[in-house]
Length: 141
View: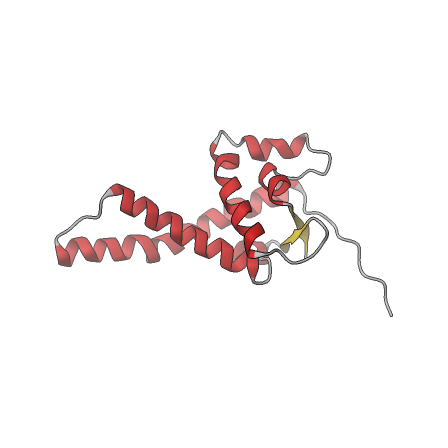
């Protein structure tokens, strides 16, 4: 029996590159699942959705996207490309609850001038703030 391979965390620059690639992929996902339905509604129904409805729709699309991928295999499309996997701090698969926490904590972590990203430069384990709070880690797959 071979011993298990040690877990190697993904580097900060690799995670940032993956985030950038993820953003590009999400533009396409949102174009199809957000823009297209609202464009059709406007063109054929002659109605525009209220901004709060569009924002809630976008939030739900992103929530479902990330929760599905993180809870089922621990990798989004960009994470597969960059060979990064989301695991719990003890190396197990992420639960839907942890995925939800990570998603919710990521908004202020990234939105407040990237404070949660900068946190990784000072964290002893180099975790982003939302990973620290959710009990998750990004590792090389």
